[in-house]
Length: 152
Figure 1 (cartoon, helix red, strand yellow):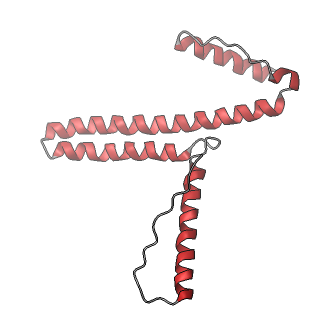
Figure 2 (figure 1 turned 90 degrees about the vertical axis):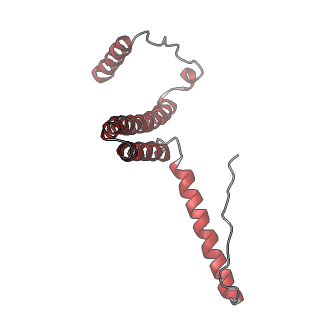
Figure 3 (figure 1 turned 90 degrees about the horizontal axis):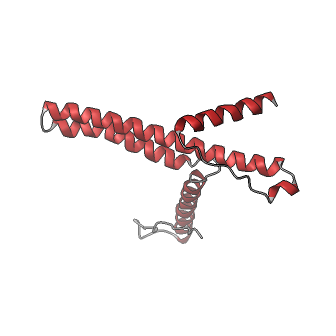
């Protein structure tokens, strides 16, 4: 359901031969298709959606540099506050982008492994798992599951 949207071809030199015009249009639209294809490939959830990672990382870097600058335009105290806000935003966005990317990639890997390794009788029966009530319980369950997987 996604659409391929291309930019408009703008002709600067109006006195081109037909062959030159055709070559210019082919080159322009070929570059447009490659750009849109790379844009789509970077948004794939299977590889963790690197586009989302770079977007969050860029937002964090922008905040990390611009918040102190905007504060410095007002006063030294606002600059320090801007440094704190900018650094916090930079770390928050970078960590969220990385963890989100890794979570999507590992989720896709788990789905692929489950599909490849499970038998036909098991595929129709979903496993009922209660979500942990506290972070400590979730950490304990994860550690136990890791220990069981390593020992088996």
